[in-house]
Image (cartoon, rainbow, N blue to C red; front, side, top):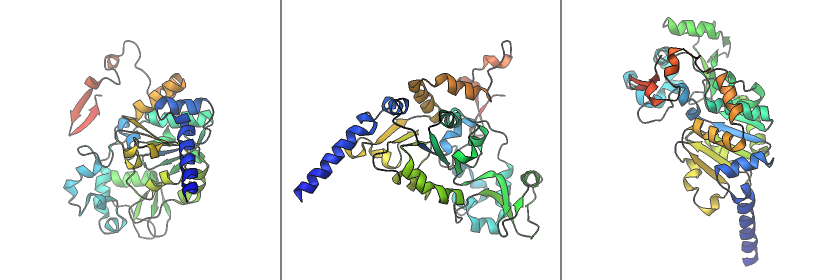
Length: 325
């Protein structure tokens, strides 16, 4: 018995020093990528990567979506995205949809995913987001699993017939509840509570988690199942790296020796990926991708006086921080 315990302990010590060469830091993560020790990266993304695009997350205390639904008098905030509630109260959901702002642009974090694809080291991105910004950044469909669906398409909740998204937008603008030709309700193809995840997720996630040699987690609370269980499906010697405003899930215990494969990079997702790219020498490439959709103001343009990342260029409006136009 004692001999078995000794072997197990020795293996644990060996793994602790070989994963990221024992360097559980931003530098250690960058070194593993730069030196070619990492070639198949899987990325899990949440609402935190879209916050800098102006899209609120769900759970932030003041600006989160769940904290701004009082006017709808819901049984619980989550009811807005429950299939049973939608069947009985579709007007509530579509009234909520009508106040959502329109066009958004990808953030640095989205373009970082595109950069991983271009470098040939991205295996897959599993996104909880429904905003479509990964595709807007140029991420190929074969590299993306929209685990909670997307607002880009819509279907009948009974027969599954596709509904033109342009017509859905028109219905929302004119405060009509969209119905299929069969007479039943239509909704965007986002996953509500009570619905199964997309088949693409079901088919691919097990093999991808076993195959990847690094797991990056960006901007998620890891609180929604079954998505949150993905981090437990990678092999034991695969480094797991969280870039987030706070430690969540197993990353709350990063200081323990048993968490030898976990790296916590605390802070804003955009700043986190920019720091990682700086370590990798990819800073200019990331900036080049970002500037395709976010060009710098021309010389002499009055808007150039407002630097894009200058906090003074932000105004408080209706409880949200919005960029001055």
